[in-house]
Image (cartoon, rainbow, N blue to C red; front, side):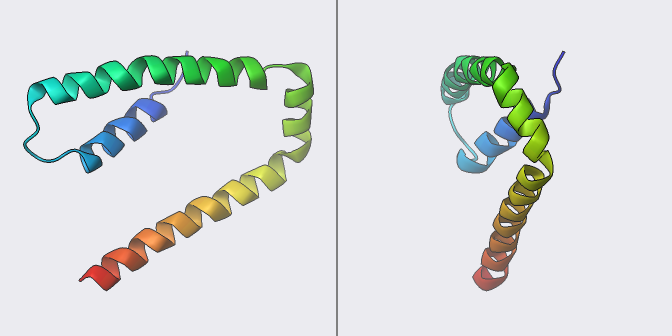
Length: 88
């Protein structure tokens, strides 16, 4: 069983990019497009990352991968904060 992080992320993402008063059919079309795409995408990632060579590489380099991803996400967060401060 997985966690609902991806559902929360893409749900929040869609809320941010859709206008406030979108027709209900647009919401359903978004769900119909994103759901199979995410299901297939995460299945492929699981198959790829579950292979022995990839798993071995990741476990050996996990600390550096986590640091790089953390730096990237921190930079994105700082950019969003900066944009919000400059906007006002």
